[in-house]
Amino acid sequence: MTTEELIEKLDLIQKMKCESPTLEIKSAEKGCPKHLYDTLSSFSNQDDGGIIIFGVDETQDYKEVGVYDPQDIQKRINEQCLQMEPVVRPLLTVGEKDGKFYVSAEIPGADITDRPVFYRGKGRVKGSFIRVGDSDESMTEYEVYSYEAYRKKYQDDVREIERVSFTALDQELLTKYIELLKRGKPRLAAIPDNEIYELMSIKRNHAVTLAAVLNFSPYPQAYFPQLCILATVVPGKEIGAVGKQGERFLDNQRIEGNIPDMLDGAMQFVSRNMRTKTIINPNTGKREDRTDYPVTAIREAVLNALVHRDYSIHTEGMPIQLIMYEDRIEIRNPGGIYGRIRVDQLGKVQPDTRNPVIASELEVLKVTENRYSGIPTIRRTMQEYHLPQPEFLDERGSFIIKLYKYGEDKLPYDDTEEIENRELLLFCKTPRTRKEICDYLGLNSVTYAIQTYVMPLVEKGLIQMSIPDKPKSPKQLFYCGERRKL
Image 1 (tube, one colour):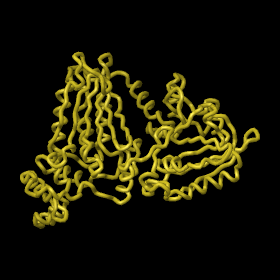
Image 2: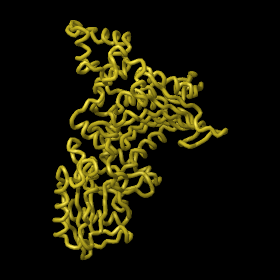
Image 3: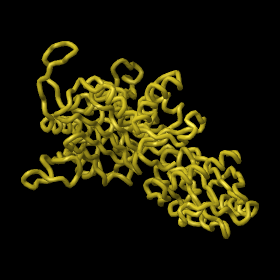
Image 4: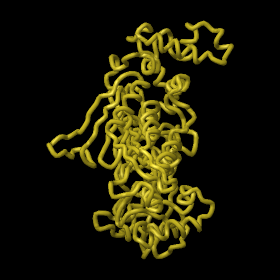
């Protein structure tokens, strides 16, 4: 950050009067804050890092008070950074405004293989923090574990389940799997079945693996009661709404069985609680039966949850949730996004696979393609239905897919522009640069993207600019809302 950028950041703080997921404000008028560790940890543990501004007093309506000594405070900041594991290397900048000095510390996001960054004085579990809104929150034991699992490449889907015997598996289904597996592979077909079981992780050290239990046991819930799907229909748009007779749920089912069984059970549940109506397609003039949601999109979303959820000991007591609201379906699975991929990259880059053995077995059984086509298929089928694009959320140990439908007053083939605008507004819930918006829209010209898609929404007041006085500023960010924390 240059001195000029620091002064611009101070002016922006006065305008916005708030902190944000990437901005922390400290007074430091009478000395350096002694406990920066939480913020150093939380900023280091997010991709975008963060900036700490010293010299602004939040308790006095963000009054610019300056720092006590710009040279000494830099020394104190560095001393605290050296107490982190791994060590944090801040980029420090000093600026002067109206005779007072201010200091900024830019904290870079650590590589995912170096996370969690934590304060040594508290240890890995108690000293690791995550940024939630504008506050620093202690990481859960599971959040700490998830980084370690990725770094050390743990394979929870092939952990040994000693209490399950091989004879407890569905032998007919297992035989079918081995036959399909050998097909077209003469070298593999020459290997005895007992050796294939170990080779393909049906067994590990002669014990049955979790993947085998989930795919080949007739009833995995005998060993893991919560590895199931809890499906509910809510009579409203939020949990807690009640029906005309006071009912909290219009339908409620615990879906069990192996993964293929649970997939079939979830689809049956959704089908019986989803309307089918006959419409006239204005593009073809033909009558069509149309369900509330495209069945293919729902199947891919449920399958995504079953295959890619976290199956570690930390989450084996957490079921997948399938909730049908009045206006949407939500599918929630334990375990956030795995590896380096971000939400905005889903379906665009090849992700790391959390449970490769489960995915491979289901591919052989023709349940899934295992070609990373699930997210693009959900997007495509929702678009073909002229419904809003799906919303993907990664929230502290959970991954959520939301599929929206229109109300009765909406025509299914209308409002294409409104759909596009809604998608862009959802994307801009997080402040975005011109380039980020252009890439999201899949366009080559930044100028065209901003003038055609963004500025009309700015004029309507639906999207705001972080520096409205300088519309062409290269530091300009666009965000959705009346006032956004930056």
